[in-house]
Amino acid sequence: MPDPDSSRTVGAVFWAFLRMVRSVVIHVFEGAKVMATGSGITTVFIAGSGFMGTGIAFLIATRTKAKVYIYDISKASLRKANETLEKYGRTSIDKKILDPEDVAEALKRIVSTERLQDAVYCDLVIEAIAENLEVKQELFKSLDEICDKKAIFASNTSSLSITSIAAATKRSDRVMGMHFFSPAHVMKLVELIPGFDTSDATLQTVTQFGNELGKTLIRSKDMPGFITTRLGLCLINEAAFALMEGLSTPEDIDQGMKLGYNHPMGPLELGDFVGLDIVLHVMEVLQEGFGDPKYRPCPVIKQLVNAGHLGRKTGRGFYKYEAKKC
Ligand SMILES: NC(=O)c1ccc[n+]([C@@H]2O[C@H](COP(=O)([O-])OP(=O)(O)OC[C@H]3O[C@@H](n4cnc5c(N)ncnc54)[C@H](O)[C@@H]3O)[C@@H](O)[C@H]2O)c1
Image (cartoon, rainbow, N blue to C red; front, side):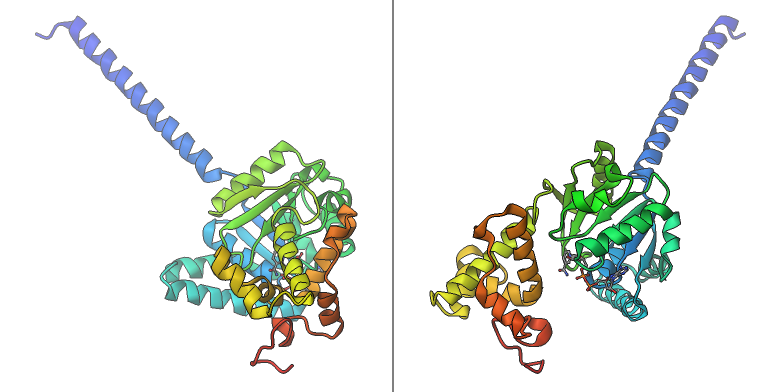
């Protein structure tokens, strides 16, 4: 006959064991639930379906399970964005970066829209429209009326003041800079820029979301040009001054930085790639923002812009490009 005491002990041990398994299971699943929720961002509204907006939409749809709205005032831009998204998808499959099923599923989650009202559903806005403070402020002011009070607003501006953009809204604690690089789905870096009033909670959520996108994050204070635009464009401007002074030829200036400093592109080539109108605009923002003449735009850049030679996009800048008419 089994000893009733010993069977009680075995029963107690058994139930204690079950309780322990249950608590481990709950712990693991709760942990997994937190990990799966992460930033808590499930719907993203991208304003601007140009070059940057399209890359950001593809990145988010393929790296997360979020629903992505891509908005623009231009039908033509939205049409082009859809074609580009398809192209990015095909390239990712051809290069074996993504499976065809994953690409198809991700692209289905991207909705293109001309209705600003669709922002009502989002947890996060990423703005990538024209680099103009008044235009960005106007858009964020309208979004502020439409979006949930908890939604976070991020701007992809390369140079404008995040604090000034945030001031156009009634949620300046929930506005910050999220500066992607082109093309956004390929480049590893995202520069995070909290504005003057950005809360720690906003910074934490956006940091978590940046991690979910698989990006390397750097943080800059909200000063003109942040880290990357200030340093990158000052180098282009300085190379233009060197050219103007007759220091050397464009080819040798670029070769010097490519071979001497391991830069993948020389500064003059890079200026043509970025667009000389953009380089000029950013140098003006830096000069005005810091009030320091060391940021004055090089007259050669001004002259090229005045002549309509904006770099690769017009077929001529510091260099001539054969494919396009000069
Ligand atoms: N191009 C780059 O390499 C790069 C890199 C980092 C950051 N940025 C920044 O990203 C932003 C977008 O740059 P881009 O190169 O994609 O420009 P883009 O010209 O390719 O696209 C801008 C899009 O915004 C749309 N737009 C303009 N005003 C609008 C409005 N009020 N509402 C809705 N849509 C509007 C335009 O129709 C266009 O489709 C800029 O702030 C730029 O400084 C650009």
